[in-house]
Length: 347
Image 1 (cartoon, rainbow, N blue to C red):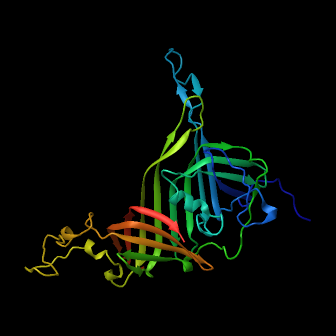
Image 2: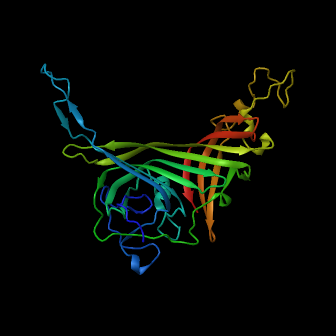
Image 3: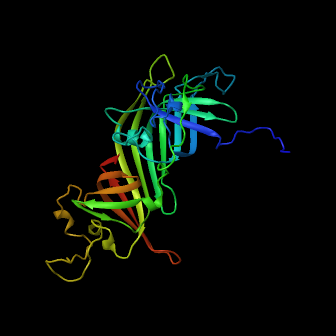
């Protein structure tokens, strides 16, 4: 006979779904199911293999002090402008968006491709099956999108959202979708690859061990008088940067990066290799790029599902810093810190 213990909520007995908002801050009533299953109408979209959820609401109280000669504690604690944060960490199973063939996994597509002038906000629904508690987080826009790839592990995505509101109940008639199953398994290391593309000559980088990239969206929360709920979250400037770590046999394994290292030789010559005891590479001032560094596209191949391959491209990328680690008891590895002028996901 099984022993009966008081029930305590466990993290894995939960569910989450998402849907793109038509009106900012209003959780939509889903009317279609991306997989066409008749028994799952009104279902929010499948997120992916979710690993962690964290939602918080901070009412940021206003402390009112007064000089009455009797106390140094606040006389009043007033409700301030609430701040809603929501972080979701998951292993993607595809990226969705236009031309994907289904409506799942649009988190990546929306939060990378659809921010700016025509920003898309998401609503999330969350349920804990132990306690029966349900929550809806509305007006979610990504402040950062982080991609983490490492050999021997599944590709991981962490999206940190700023939200408008967190409510205790779900929209009426809403259901949670189920895992689509094969072939939509999570992307994993044997499917991934890193490609450098300078001009029209893409070069695969099989030496890559880790790939980390972060897209930071400069968001501005806009409150208003008469309510503690945000009126809007405006997107301003954005940036994309990251680090690639890899083993190597020769520096020439990394196209376009050799001009970072200066040629230092003794003796006078006017032909390459240049003689410059100061350590300044005289080829850099002659660069046709405005940065003095070779610009290229860094492409991360996320994975393949059937005949469809999913890509994450960082365009206009430069590598201004190289870290060389030479440990005595481990592999010699090089870390390329890069920054880019654009980012997009596509098939």
